[in-house]
Amino acid sequence: MDANQWLIAAAGFLAGLGVAGGAAFWWFSRQMKAAAARVDKVEKARQFAGQQVTQARKQVEALQKELGELKHAAKAATLRPFKHSEPPQPEAPAAIDPFLPLAPAAPPTPVGADGFADTLVLKPKKS
Image 1 (tube, rainbow, N blue to C red):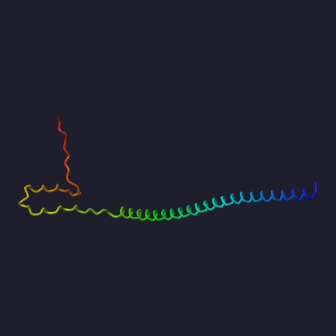
Image 2 (image 1 turned 90 degrees about the vertical axis):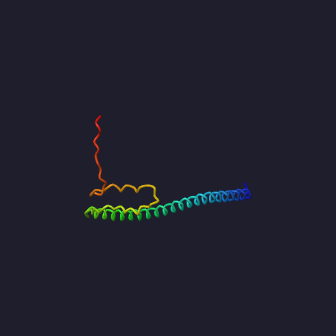
Image 3 (image 1 turned 180 degrees about the vertical axis):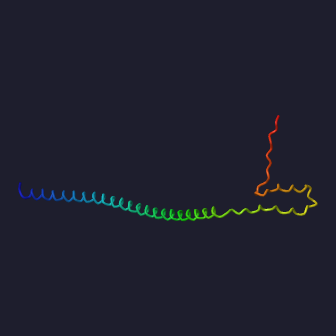
């Protein structure tokens, strides 16, 4: 082999090495961009999850505070004696309209001392 052939072989080897290096650089840069996009997506998801956790903790704290207030109010209500109030009395009927063909309605059933209408227990008929 003379020097010309060695120079052509070396130039071909360097050109092939350059093409292979360029292809490897292109392939690895594509892989790195894809990995960076996945890392960015995971980081955004992590931040969003962190925001959701913070919001959930605030909601739990508010609910616990409200539950404590309700428990305190319920405890205070059970300790306080229940005051019976009289049931509302029906209003007096207005003056009878002379043009009204129907008789006025019967007065409402009387209300007992406990606030409920008096009831009667009927015995079953024997046949």
